[in-house]
Length: 253
Ligand code: ADP
Ligand code: MG
Image (cartoon, rainbow, N blue to C red; front, side, top):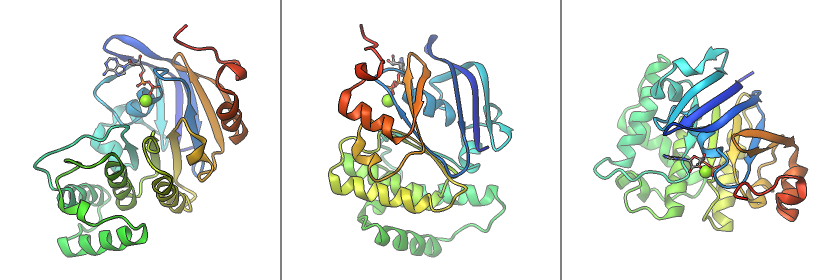
């Protein structure tokens, strides 16, 4: 098993957000998290990537048979956990290309591999960007600084392509993207998923992305727990009928 979450409780600002969540992910599986706003979807993926907002108060998380909760942010990244943010942060003064090369080389060092020099890195990024038709000008700018919504999402894809994580977590990567950009996301993700040791945990509200990336499991979160699990047909049903029709009432009532 790649990831095993048992009875996870997480607080944000002393408020209980996740309340006894269980989730198992095997290598090669695609899992989708759905649920109304504020049900804790982002909190779950943030907790897995050791975001400082999230305080684990109870439960266990095993990742590759190790205790994930004992690993810091950097170690989790080096062990292959990757999260694409719902709103990627802008970092003025940090060149994107430099940022990416540092990230890759940290991971290579951790795995006792040779670091990439500037030329090798440029060659690698050029190849990957060309394959997915991503503008290489993004590399010369500061990290996400002044990037449009679509450019920020594309830059997340560049990180994915270069870091090749084992657990890919995408938090609403499709929101605000046009049809063509959604197709690029799907192509990158599907190409990475050809490696059957790699798994995906994805948050989305739309069927648009799921029609390109076929999920094995669709989970619905409500009040900090997974209350329903199904296959792709659950997402389709939700898309056509809404939450109430599948027995999930509105949280805000
Ligand atoms: P979802 O992604 O399902 O829409 P989130 O996991 O982002 O929901 O949020 C779950 C709950 O946690 C919400 O009630 C939200 O307001 C609260 N929350 C999230 N981040 C913070 C924060 N930094 N400070 C205070 N409350 C937060
Ligand atoms: Mg969210």
